[in-house]
Image 1 (cartoon, rainbow, N blue to C red):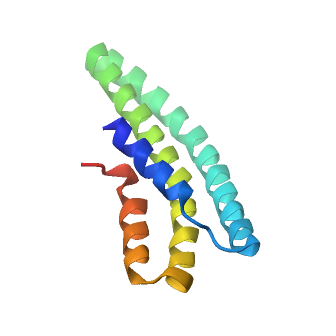
Image 2 (image 1 turned 120 degrees about the vertical axis):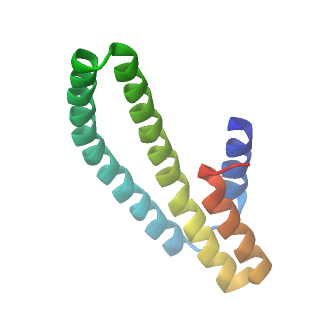
Length: 118
């Protein structure tokens, strides 16, 4: 499954992104998304640590570890999706402007399937 995700992501990156202004806007959106994610994850990590200790002491440590693993996986999923989305969005905009409907649909499909490869 991870191989499918990397193939989809590489396909997205290979597509034309348009002119320099489009790439600049995409890079700024991507940078803003990563800054937001880092701030959010700082708060989320604090919450996860508290809940892990509460679960460990009041329920059991296996549940606490499962909760921790789920939180970490969720954080990775958020990072990967915010890493791919701005790249797919600018390429979708370029495809809508220059390449036509079939290319737009492919970019939309691949851009949204980074988190749901089947």
